[in-house]
Amino acid sequence: MQTYLINLLRFLPEDAPADIFVLSLDSLPLPTDRENIQRIPVDWPVENPFVRAVWERIHLPKLLRQIGADILFCPGGIIGASVPPGCKSVVMFRNMLPFDLVHRRRYPLGYMRMRHWILERVLQKSMLQADLVIFISEFARKVIESRAGGPMKNSVVIPHGINPCFRNGEAWNPRRPDWLRPEGYLLYVSKLDFYKAQVEVVQAYAVLKQSRPTREKLVLAGPEESPEYSRKVHAEIHRLGLHEDVVITGHIPYEQMPALYHHALVNIFASRCENCPNILLEALAAGRPILASSTPPMPEFAGDAAIYFDPSSPNELAEKLAQMLDDPVRMRELSARARERSHHYDWPRTAIATWQVIGELAEKR
Figure (cartoon, helix red, strand yellow):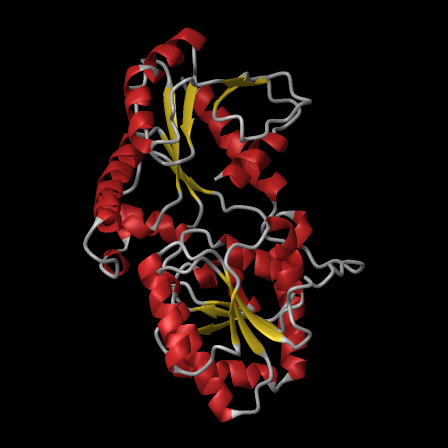
């Protein structure tokens, strides 16, 4: 969400007259050249979600009245306070997982299951209450309206943009990270988690190696956020004897990510549950061939710039990988399509559209 807020504030239209008050920690950088953007410090330890909920319930309504707020914008999706009369509320829907009952059940009974159960109810209540809901995919809007039994009061779809550092321009050739071996590699960027299907990707890679001479390594780049699922991935690599061929990187510094995408032979995106798949957008911008999950909303974003596969079928992914790697003409064609498609997603365009709908809502007060 920090990337979203940074770009939303960075590309605030020059003629926007509104005063913008940002309730955030100091870790969120604010533009220094805009006098109408101010940070309001919070002296509670609001990094803790329970403490934050209490603060919002007790103090936020008073603050909104004190500053005479016309709009309360909650990009995290939850309205945690009673909004004063005359103040409109806006939420952005980001987290699809609480509304995906199939993938929620993949988690063991415990904290994560309970968290998703609570979030489903709190997020839906906030969206029904809000004067405007900003969705970041058409797929998400359809899912939520289906679950809610009808459309929101007012909603719009505005997808995220892509940081220009990921774009493959004519002179763009980021240096290959030193820790990557000189061999080619197949790349899947994502945190290790139950709905990300790294186990199936490892299985597909094993099938690929059995079907053709395959020197390419498989790189799984992302933090191991779910200990239970990480153990499953490591166990599958060990079972298949792939410990020399599969690299699990853990966290990668953001500044190294453009080069990581760019030097991959193929970018894989196997997630089963997304709202606006930022990783897929970054992969498009890198201009490398993409094999993407056929699960919505991935086709909504990549269009004809990717080859799609069922993320639950390792054999299908292995077959399509083999076809792609053995067809350099097709790979060049997909690279060009990916670069072209990436220009649909632009942070200035996202910010301008967002501020426009918020401004229109303020005018209706």
